Image (cartoon, rainbow, N blue to C red; front, side, top):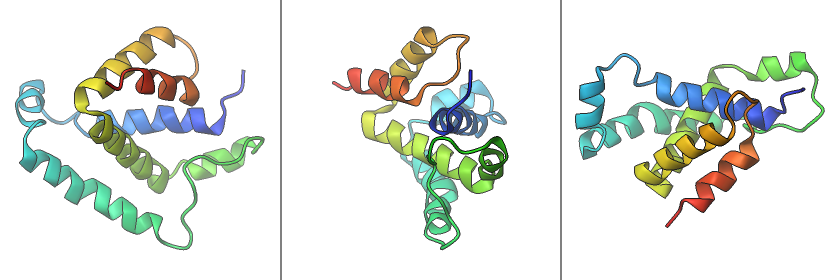
Length: 131
């Protein structure tokens, strides 16, 4: 079974998003992640620099065309891809709310357990939980 580029991107984006909190104690994350200061810090540290990098002429879309060979896909898995993916996940979380995002991600993982990431299924799950 081959991974498609959007599915690889979903996997890497999710990993990058949650790995950014790995160095913090869980009690700190639970207590602080809802604060405005933390959200502004994340925006300043992560999202804005990614947007600047994305505006550069050598940037490329997160999702690339199907049928690309493995070496080309691997060449796209660089810092820009990880930071764009992480920022995209953070923006999605802000748009749909942290609770809806968390619930959608939990449902998606239950549905898609032990299989390859499926971007369209993730989006369907996310959209079904928006209230």
